[in-house]
Length: 84
Image (cartoon, rainbow, N blue to C red; front, side, top):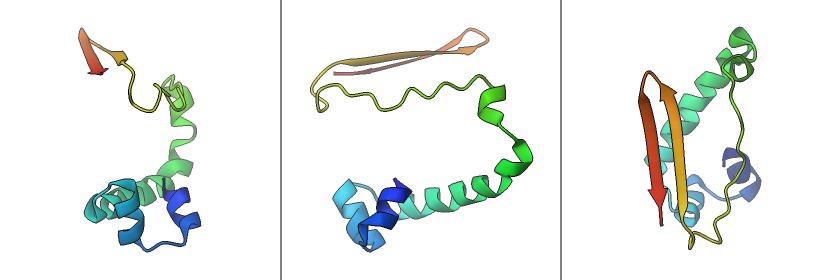
């Protein structure tokens, strides 16, 4: 998203309006992720060590279809999300 913003040539306000985001959320996440990026070198490849799997983008027909996602977080905790 931040790459799209940088390439857009829009102000933060214009970009957030076009994406349906609040300006404060955009700025908060940009600041948080900038702090994360500076510590990536210290962590090495944390995603690989944690068994992270990039699922990419999930297309459900423009939001019209049903999406069900279950994540087993371990310790008997399961996160179950349903849309549609």
